[in-house]
Length: 305
Image (cartoon, rainbow, N blue to C red; front, side):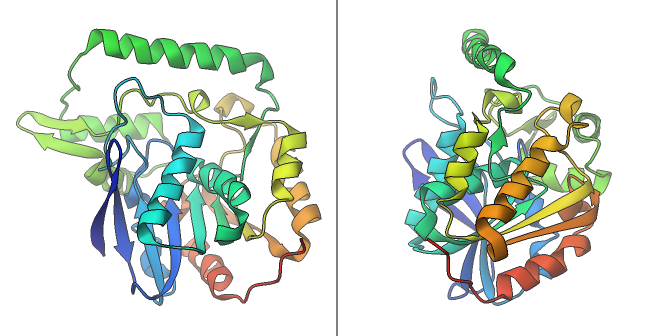
């Protein structure tokens, strides 16, 4: 494994690399508020002859924060993917996305369909539907704007806490992450200072619903029709079904997503359910490594355009 920094207008995108440079390229996209260490336990179990790059999204991990006044909108993360693959000089590659990273990879694959040959979604969806969210969407946008302006006005320094307090805070906010895996995410997600640790991520990034892009079912169907990639969707049996936990009992939107993918992509779509929670790829990577390896190594099926 080696580290990489790619220049962008606001600073740099940090990334981790595994495998030979001449291997088939795979770009790995982490989840909301996570970082590239999300893939540390999975990638060593995947085929060794592929070239894996796990990037930190802007404002996460070791990547630069966006410039002052520049918001963290979903499409900006999609643009980051385009910047990274341009810097790497990749014309066609595979995408592996967990959670939020899957929605970024999904949108990228539909906007730039000729560039993506395989899309792997880890307890994720290529897009987030506006089901259950239409009445709240304007409130989300208002709260996102007010949150950013309040942070700019307060100009408070980042809070310094002890390593143990930082870990307990992470585990409290994310019950699906075990202690060992939480410590792994914090290795890259924090910076040691004299009195303890400070969080690396940009504090402008807060609630996921303020950055996720919710789309209609009509637009979802249109977008999936653009896909040229083969798609593997791995659903964790105890994973998430919606952006907000209070909607998790409603599994119909995910059922619509999978039935639409199966109907449009036909043999180019594969759905697998595995035991484990939302972080199964990190907590129990052996549950997903086999199916991902087989999918990466399988031969391409021509897209029916």
